[in-house]
Image 1: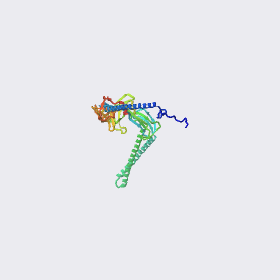
Image 2 (image 1 turned 90 degrees about the vertical axis):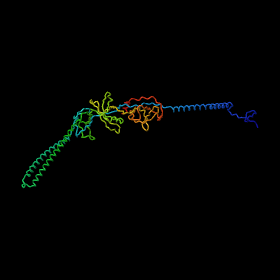
Image 3 (image 1 turned 45 degrees about the vertical axis):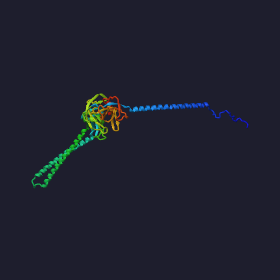
Image 4 (image 1 turned 120 degrees about the vertical axis):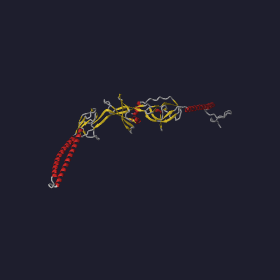
Length: 433
């Protein structure tokens, strides 16, 4: 066949029979093999090293955890001590008048004149206002006229009775047979009837006199007078106002007045302190915030002797003199009392632990072992708490105990913390408010 340019070249006897791929060479194959060998050496060397480091870290962590688990917790403690024999208690109070009255009118009419205004000091019996009562005046005139007529009727009945008496005596003393017995009895009946009519007329005079006396007594209320010495605090009357007798709903009072010397101070004592202030005679100090230099020493005059079921407080009254009228009703004052402690134990509020069974404290004994004890809270003073049972003077109680500590654990006790000597008065007052 004729030769063409597409025929393959003849094979040489010395040529390599293996195929040779385009783009590859023996040098590149050697490099790939070298890289693979280096990677295998790195992996073989790095894996044991990483495993060694991880094992070391796990061992160190386990050792640290074991040491922490076996170490003792550190706690701060405070020494329990007896509460002070007396402690101050400051509560807000409100001044009130010794007497306070709302003055209504007792007659129907119109205001003819009023004599005093708010702030005026009045004396007992002083005329405050005058009421014009035309209807009452007319009723009084009519009653007096009826009384006059009744008295005149008595005169008539007296004359009739006197005539009947004479006729009866004449017929009674006449000899028998001269007058008929029936006529004699008739004259006696006429006399008895005349006496009865006279008695009825006299009774009618008494009735008409009572009406007059009642209306005269009512007319005295045309002058509205002060029931006691005091101060007018409110005036709601003016000339020409129509007024209606009584204090029923809808009637407008004329005045409101009060007596401010002495003064009452009302204090609502919390139930926790009510037992110490239940009886009168407990000392108290009254102060005003706007007059820091003014202090009055007083005593409890009276108490309600009952707890308000809504507020759980005891109403206490303190009486103080007020000759210079420096106090007025409705002012706020601060009243301080000295309460007895009654052998209570005092600990910081941070020592309390509240559980479902109630409040507890954690007492640390001499060996460092902790014991949870139930306590009874007698008074809560904010930063301090007074306990009625559960601890004794000298006991060490832990502060802010960790929830990981259980009853019977052994702890390391830090130096006892100093407990505050007394409760913060400001805190006590704020809590009371």
